[in-house]
Image (tube, rainbow, N blue to C red; front, side, top):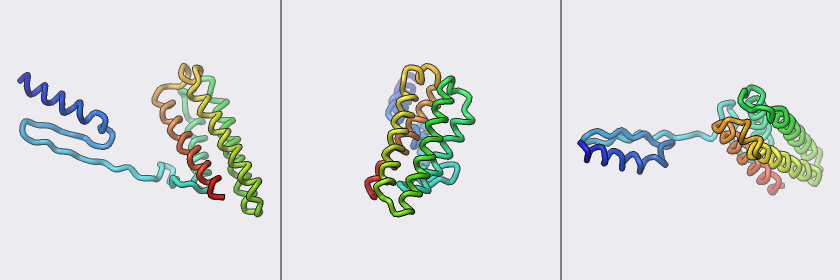
Length: 158
């Protein structure tokens, strides 16, 4: 009995880092592994890529998530303002690029990247750590980091 618990503990400890990717069920002689995969589309049908359509869709989804969140504390207003500024800058960059002015479009994308940096700082700050629930904060940090990467990638392709 003790050996079985020890073996199960070792098996669980080995699979703990991969818990998000696979579920493992261990019985006395059999091990069944079920693997799940993730897609590159978000629940709002946003495709994750470095394009204006994707960035606008994901920024809108972020703004909706911020608006509906109840665990942001007093940082909610500032984060919503920064998300609105980000959306404005992305729209302006797209309009500038459509008008043929790559330099202004690149400048607007640089400012959008700065807005994302400010949002990330707000979430990681001491106030953010105290006010925002851990799960929400982790999710926001990942979303902001992905958006920042794609904004920079899009800017480099111009």
